[in-house]
Figure 1: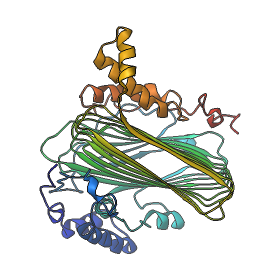
Figure 2: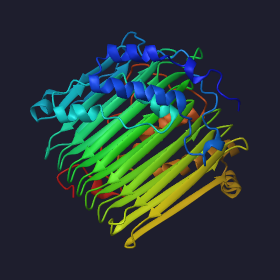
Figure 3: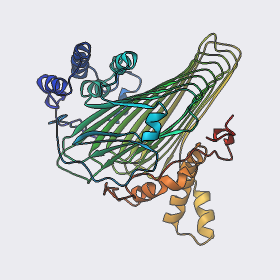
Length: 461
């Protein structure tokens, strides 16, 4: 692959970044952070770790002419599911909708920097120093965002549908989210990214920064559905801190885009807290995905698992990095990393790299990893049952990914994701049309055979 056409200095200027800060009314303390992020963008490499620089999965990125202040008409939306918090980010800005019943229950939703809570406002603007070029660009271009605060001991689960629609060439949307969930409360979020059409006139940029704080006994499921057109360059930065007895599930469906980088960092601080990090990727053509999962066990009796599976064909690329760190006082930890990839063509490539860093004796930590082609014996078996070779390969690939989806705490997730996966498999785009089929149907956390304790009802443990 060739290198990027334009230098990073041509992507966006310092003056454009300063104009953006003025347009969104940056508080004084954040102006310096935004400027510092831009300086880091200019000098940092795309991959800071020399061990991984040779993979070259972010070649041909050309974001010249980025416009973080591009404006346009709001996209057409299907009706929101009843009782659901809806947040929409598009060229017209951000639109937030909080049902009256949730307002009365004490749920608070505030747009970019407008929360009246001093602590939440400070946390919203406390962005960490980015370690690489694209993460720094994400911080420098923050132009959307919100704070959601769920009070303690809310009787029913809060559902959030977070939609971002890319609709213009050279568009840049950088969304920051701060989600705080009180003790014993429950939250289900679907973050979805789409495009109105595949526009070949220029690449566009989407950045997502989500930070979760879970109180004791809180239960949170965060579903990411990544289905933009093939001109989208995307960076996801997600972080969470767990309270005692809390449980978190990160779920990510990588099904679109040109270049995609995802970073998940979870600190299991509270005693007895648990996290499930479940990810699937499907890549074809020139797509590439770069995923890293960090699970840091700090409290005692914490449980964590990361399961990642990718299917790649044509000249697609994938890289999965998993790191489990068990601190010296994190006794009775259970942790597991599973990273597997299936290659459907000779030109496809994937790398899976699990790492365990164990500083405590009283733990159990394991990993499993592989990269392999389609098993010809499985193909032959299906052909012997009258199934055409192409259909047999597809069935094997879909079953390989469904292993992850079937282990999620979202009921019927495989059936909900399949229409997008089917379109990608057939080489079709999934443009945003504004009808009810554009977004994922209403999600429900009702448990599964593998994890019945996830039930969001009176029997929830």
